[in-house]
Picture (cartoon, one colour):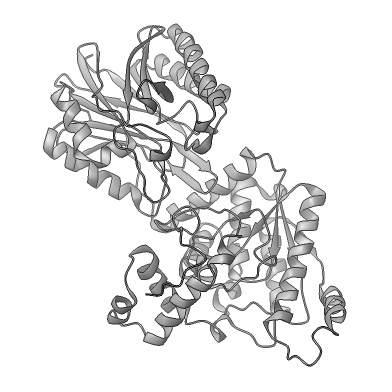
Length: 539
């Protein structure tokens, strides 16, 4: 296999679409074969999409996967001598396994079962799969390839086992969900394997949004010295190629520049929105525009994901809405070219307050009246959604969700929470990033004090610490699992730490009712964060 090419199919499977995913693999095989590749690697569970979750508990799904694999194996025979690695679930005498089969000339040449089943963060493969325990080494034109799957690469054993079985090059097929700066972590971990085995390796990742997860691609190859010799773009599908030299090492090929953290996060959000909307066949999206920074960012993301013609912005002013909020909202909508409507809510709010007047007699106005305004807006947006079929995108950020600075059945009402894992300080950075590409968000939105505008002269900081302080506490408490004492020792005000951590606990019940949204950190509310609602423990 001198100067042989290994092709990497960085594809975007649709979960459960066995026919569509088969076509993606066949198209990649056709392109790889036409360009002289000898081996084609596809992602983990490329036949089904990842993660199939409780579909794996349905016998009919497993039977359909087996049938699809048989048909794919026969179809790939047209590409004579091309070896294709395809990921799929497989029922064995040991149980259901997360497998990858090596297909060539209409036959299954070998099958590998994933050994290390992740059961942390967003993963629960132990619920579905039985681990394998055997290496998989297959030969193509005199070169011996070892094959492992995703989590296997984060442990020393599987790579060493493949090396001991005679592998000269390691292939790593992945469906690795994105979080901030994960591509740096992947390369660091895999270089440790090379230091032990001196095997060059090829890492392939899938692309796309699947519910709350985003898969960022960013596939790469490292030679036997651990040097990066090839890399593919993040958040884009494509076919990459790696060449081997006569010494069975990997040659220098095309590499892609790394993205900034802001660019990564923004592209992850765009891809997450695009795939959630399109894969679920929504005709478009609706966003409640406030003239504030959060809805401005969500609107820009939606337009970049779907195009302006599929995005509708609705401004719903109340008696407390500042004139500059109207002006900025109109300018933002015009800059992005979306349909823009205004629906005043004062009369609706008055009607509800009148209906409740007898019940509230003798009681002071409080957050209840503020929440009525938010809930009127939520009702209007959901009515538009029901009538048009478009999906409501909510605009709450992670900082607000953490401490409950949001209204159930109000601003939380909707189908997809785009920035639910984006801290407020990162919201501003992402707006600046988007404006650097093209200045679409009015500068005043980024410089004025954030406000819910539910009462006169209200600002967020009336109720919360500064967002720099709040986000600092949240990062330490949620993502680093630091104790209250550790956070205070790091220089944070004890009263603020106590307040924020108490509010996180108190508002768990709210977050359980929030819509799904894009995950970009290692500890997103939802799949990562599984705290009980009913609990008396306080750190």
